[in-house]
Length: 154
Image 1 (tube, rainbow, N blue to C red):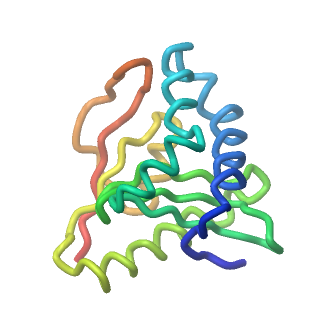
Image 2 (cartoon, rainbow, N blue to C red):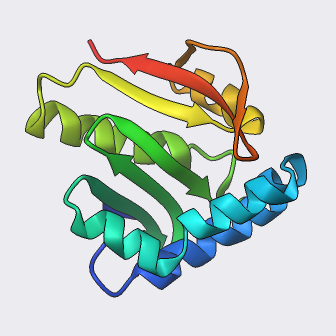
Image 3 (cartoon, rainbow, N blue to C red):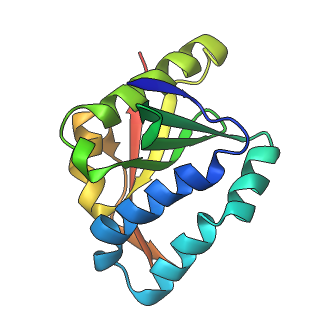
């Protein structure tokens, strides 16, 4: 298993995994508008535009060359995507991805003390296991349901 920053040209592999996991585990809880909004967010053009802005970084977990986990980080302080392949769920891969970015943030951005996420309702428990706390009520914006959460780095 290897965790690393994504290289150019790997965007499609990463977004295929995100789409697959989202469709199975998150989309059933969303209204059609929310599904449409999320699919627009993970379009290759949108992802490339975010990465070119310099405010986003995408990290991959690979097993034998296969992408099995994806974490997108905005401004070294907000997780905008965290998805793990179904067959790898429950084995600590989300924790490994999170620990990887926590180290990157601590080294490259030591003043960044808070990491935020707008967790989908069915991912709330996973984020709590990672040390996040809910800081607001469940919300829905353009069909996307989320719970604001924060992690405080010591």
